[in-house]
Amino acid sequence: MPIVQVGDPVLRRAARELSREEVLSGEIQELIAQMRETMRAAPGVGLAAPQIGLPLRIAVIEDLAEYHKDIPPERLAELARNPVPFHAIINPKIVLTGEPIEFFEGCLSMAGFSAIVTRASAVRVECWNAQTEPVSIEASGWYARILQHEIDHLNGTLYIDRMKSRSLSTIDNLIRHWKMKPIDQVKAELELG
View (cartoon, rainbow, N blue to C red):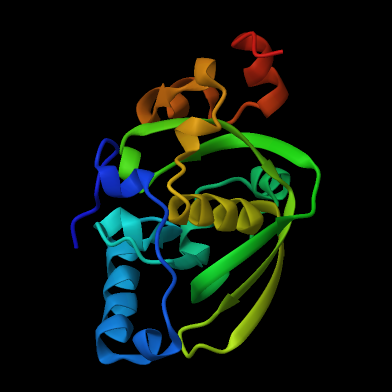
């Protein structure tokens, strides 16, 4: 499925909730499967329905271990990044529970760019899974960041609304200049304070 890029109005509108009947329908179950394939093909660790042009409160998340293979263990530890199995979150409500933490973040709907974004280090999310069972997710580290990013999409918010604007970078320049530096060093060099 094509991924909608920044500037499309669907990315700036709050998505609507779904009923149990809708979620259990063959149409929405197929949509979840297609979102999974689209996310993996991108590749990405999350995808919200507005990113494929549908204003529905559904997101899929998966952070495969293979995405971590080129990241040094000390960097994975700094990011508190661990594999996350595939799952869908439907009609989520989020509570931020952790301290603020800053890292570079990108988005499939703003391809080729990244910026420093402050997010809570831990969250609690109440939602339905793909079978409309109530789920309570307690997440920290990178997983908490993914959840916040995807739920923002469902509310019409993009990471560029939260970013430190002086840190906006192409992915090529992120890799060239900032990728392996501690975030405090990056902020100092960019005079972010």
